[in-house]
Image (cartoon, rainbow, N blue to C red; front, side, top):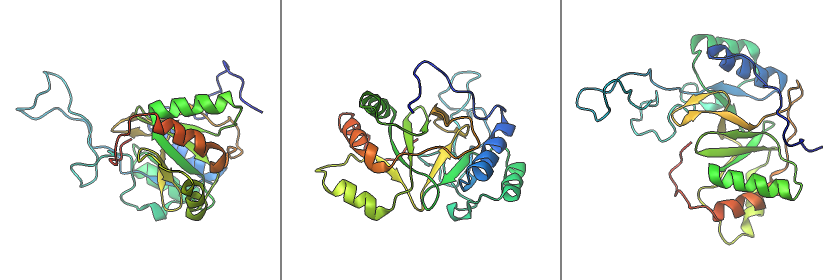
Length: 236
């Protein structure tokens, strides 16, 4: 049954701040059996060094806590531990976020966990409008200020390759998060802004329903094709 427009779902995670990150990680891992791990996070906020171009009292942009000074996904990726360490074990999740309470919640995609397809925010809005118009049911949608990610049922590279082989061109701004990949989940802080649910999961303990990638990929490719391509530079 499709969601009734105009009604807002109850917030899935009611806590705020650091406790919200731990609560979200525990809910995903234990209630939905989605393997998670802490993201690298952001460096502590500070003032611009002398000689900078920011005005008095302004703060420098938040940078990634990884060693890469030019990280294009600041805060929004695994580092230590690596993505293979993702787990559904509540004790491990509690230990991680007790020691790193500000860490983003990272979902390890693929296998039995959800996969995702991400695209620029403008294209994402167009794709969702098209899917709604034709009555295609969608699952949860994760959003940052620059990109939207549609969660889908697990798929493998062979299935994806078959879906895309018939298309003349697939925009480089359209990205696929499957086995060995990851996705940052709400309410994680990242360099691009806070991650949120554009379409939240239902407020139940059951794992969210997810569509097959084949049912939505056409709309995503079409929407991305009609949107200026941001090139190969990955950014959230």
